[in-house]
Image 1 (tube, rainbow, N blue to C red):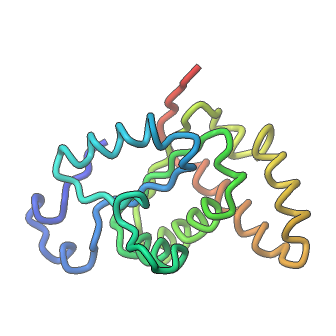
Image 2 (cartoon, rainbow, N blue to C red):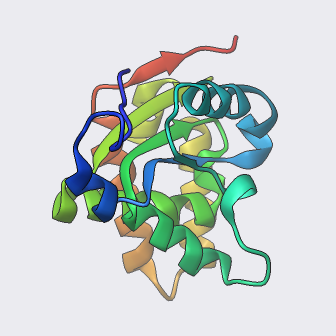
Image 3 (cartoon, rainbow, N blue to C red):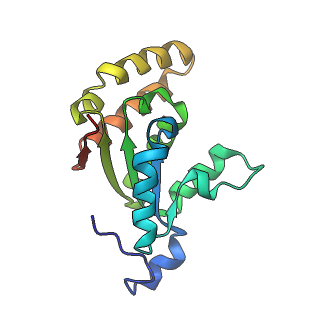
Length: 167
């Protein structure tokens, strides 16, 4: 993957439009202390300005609003799918916003499948199927949101990405 920062590529138009080069969406308890930490370190070593919730959230602000704004202000999004990614409604809200930004602002999206098969995400089987059964029960008054999450997962899983096995 080659991601250049706006300033290093000489494209100063982007530097005023984008606050971050990359937004990383991930399920913290699945990947924070291993894969995502290494990905973050590798990108920042290369001079890429990365938003990652543990590093960038201001204490006392509403997390959801700040995360949604960070997604909008990012040139690229990397989604690290893991087995339990779909269990988190926060992650699903992030991916829905990422897909919205992809479709309305042309944001580039790169999926990484960490210890989960891309077809499991695309077809929403296995742990993803189990997570959605719970979401449909929990959010039975707002089934539209659950369908938005399903559609966003499928759209991103259909993109060309990387399969990082941890087996």
